[in-house]
Length: 351
Image (cartoon, rainbow, N blue to C red; front, side, top):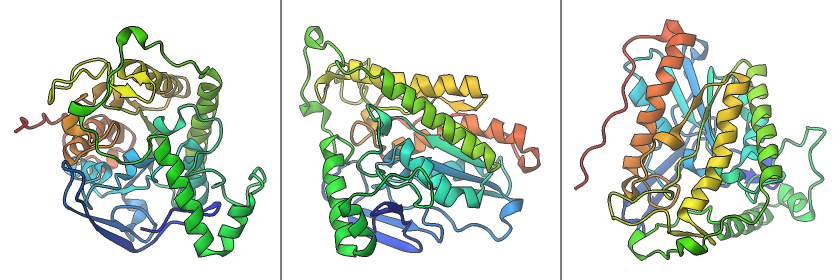
């Protein structure tokens, strides 16, 4: 699949498919097919009677795009199926872009989603903004060129505007940087991971307050942009596998697994500081917040690494979001109400 950031512009691949084989991830399908529609998103093309449909677009990073899940297995696709009996004339698309933080989300809204103007935009946000005071390796410099506040591009970015080879090289460099910061997709075997001594886990030494303030400001800007273009924002907190507790599938203590130089419990508390910003903004700005971080089980059955979902995990994400989003739709868009809202489906017993 071609890269979404071409130099410093977001160039979405349209009407493009990618078929790959998986020989390394035991929790994922052996065959993975991805299709990007006429908008460059995952999901069906916009219906001709777009204004008569209840339209939803999911925005986020890799935990929204679900790049290693087969077509129809990403959680926005499962969300559409879960909501369909209760919401008539429903259209859902997945505009997640691997690696994007709120910097990239704003660029995507400005360049692509604002003119589409769906009824609802779901923002699954937070993990790619941890310790982030500037655009990350995937969304740096990706703001539309027409914006007056666009940064001055570097020489590689300028060259990448005119050379496909340079663009591929630049994105390869961005991928290396992303994998270095654990933003890639590698299967985690909990039975063989390192653990930290609880007594030696002193927590983050970096002052995150400036980054949290920046995250809050960018999230508020996304909310304002959504409302300006007639779109209802809905914020979703970010779940992760590690944290307090024991994994029910393997019996591994998720509080002591090593996450970079931290224990899992401390690393999760750091993630929760960003989730708390999301929750607080929801209250202050009167924006619905779906607290997926609180409701998603910490069970390795649902993750193939620390943050990305297996097909079963994608189904659980869709179930949680559907149970909260459906009442919002019924209250704000009553003309589309066609049935009772779903409860959170109980997971099937593990084999």
